Amino acid sequence: MKPPPWFWVVAVLALLWNLLGAWMFWQNLAMTPEALAALPDAQRQVTLARPHWTFVPFGIGTLGGVLGALGLLLRRRWAVPVLLLSLLGIAVLFAAMYAATPVWALTGVRGAVFPIVLVLIGGLLWLYARKSAARGWLR
Image (tube, rainbow, N blue to C red; front, side, top):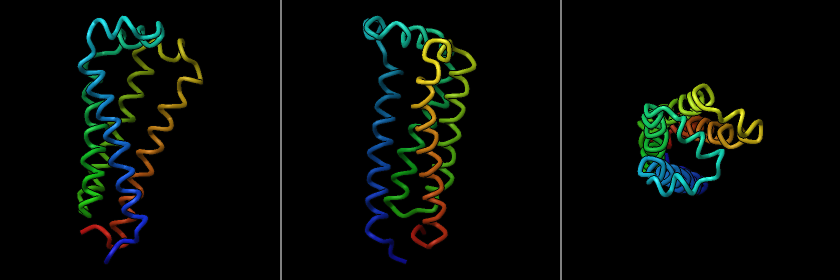
């Protein structure tokens, strides 16, 4: 079954969104001491307090999102579990960040908006992939 034109719009936007996330992952992974020193004080404190293992769910979330979006563009059913894995990576990352760093004390409710938006977008992309598979748009 051929997907409607808006399927392609969503898939391309998903890929662009997740490529931005992958770029952010790389920026965090390759951060130099000079770049760390240039961060605002609160962000620097959170970055220094972040456990190194959190790069694993960060990578799973972002790279899984890129692969899942590519799966949508290729109209492959494997996009569904890959996007679910991405969503779980994002959720674990932010749970760890709030449990292991002073992010809440430094940013309060205002700082929670972006992580919530990221989890919502990840969840919506996964649901979209599931619905696309159910409608026969993915093979």
